[in-house]
Image (tube, rainbow, N blue to C red):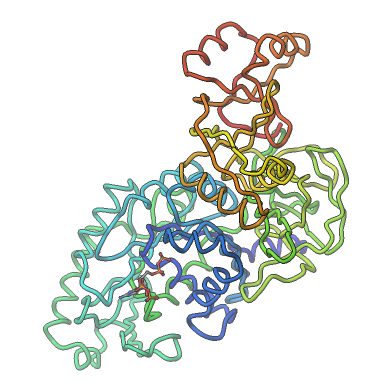
Length: 528
Ligand code: G4P
């Protein structure tokens, strides 16, 4: 096997999907602990708090109780390399989350045992379904009273439309929580608060028939458990690797993240069965993860990650080949060779300079505005990965400056913040307006706040008569020119310099489309 094949086979790149408060942060922290990435529980929250402190605009994030930044954490476990891509928490940022989910090979769904399937989980699950992403499920907060486990699985199956294969099964819940049974190995893992952080630190019985078990959990509970296990066996789906990998079935684990109970069983199963990087579609061909030449795509850009340095970092998911420090790569959209100097890896403990990276890994490339979301890098081949769209925004506002002398700063700020992909910035052909489009209304507040905090510009956003936007494509140069002349009042350039039709009404859009049958009006922009 080549180095690339070996390294790709070791990678597990995933994201956690959940409704806010289900326990994503807590679980992340425990997973990192197993990876040896952080020494003390509480570090992730600590980091969260430290990040809030470094930049004032984070205060807004905190005020709103949302998390708009997402990051990448890498840790080794059981000879595998796990890459955990964090997804932003708030519903307004669906587009961002969508793109993170295009960069992973599988997902982990966290459900609160008392609340069951919640609205945001349903949405995220819909996104996963688009790519048949394999999903494992962790039912959290077992140390609290919650829904009956059988009913909960039923809820997941009916609401989310995915079969459930329980891998662990709870023994009691809330105050009566005694442990979990592993339905495949048969082992019983006892819940002992303050202990059982690791396998070595746990009391484990080989099976429910171990005579010593009765003494620990009581005869009544044991009888109840055996009865329930029979019922579960009859009523639930057995684990089927093929069905899991095709997104039809989810293995389910029960536990308590905050008590680190049941987490290692999940992680062991995850690194064993979750998929390594798979082939990915491009505009011309499928690229296999084990191909030796480097390829990757940018799924996220973050401006001012470190306000002291004003850096913008493009997050590239590697799809094939090997990245090594300082190498040159071909930026397909611009047709230029770019030196990937000082690329970052995201070891959970900190950002570090990358020496090597492999399929499934994410590297951070410093960038001065030349890289956009969706861009592909290769070693020379002109291919573009597909499926990383920019959606047409639904809401539009015109930026209004307090101090007209700061126009340059405003333009720069809007353009740079738009690179992150949560908002889109348009410059009409016929006016000096600066128009910002977003999918959620909260975005305008965030941008206004960040413009002030990061660029020293006070701006507000006022209504503008734009109902929707469409990217314009036309193969025939002449017809495109005619179209541009006729429709100049409604045309603009986006931040990447692409032509966009800003329609004042839906009816106007329809008419424009009817009048120009040779012109394509695209609701998403993907780089060709
Ligand atoms: P999120 O990232 O999905 O939004 O959730 P997060 O991990 O922040 O957890 C939300 C709350 O649920 C936190 O409480 C956390 O401590 C709690 N929690 C997580 N896992 C468990 C569990 O297994 N059992 C119980 N009982 N609680 C759990 P908080 O009060 O909001 O924060 P904190 O004061 O505990 O930090």
